[in-house]
Image (cartoon, rainbow, N blue to C red; front, side, top):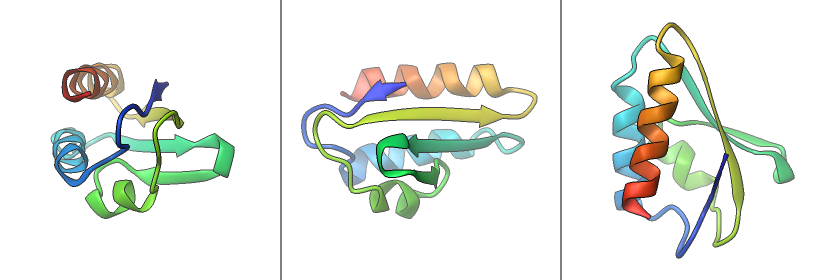
Amino acid sequence: MFVVNRTGFHVVKAKKFSDLASSFPTEEIRVVWQEKNVISDAKSILGIMALDVTKGTVLELRAEGPNEAEALEALLALWNEIE
């Protein structure tokens, strides 16, 4: 889980996030906004931007596939780096 700080997912952040998620081609990676019951493909910049999250939104990151742990670790590290 991670919390959206500052201004939410701006375009540059969404692009970096979706590019990194796409670098794990065998994994299905989803961003889940449980409060609104919305699931978005982390590999899609449009899917991420469509979440339209704001400051303080709690999101869950899910991955399935042979390298799921590595994908989650990399995406969370990127999230913390670009926050």
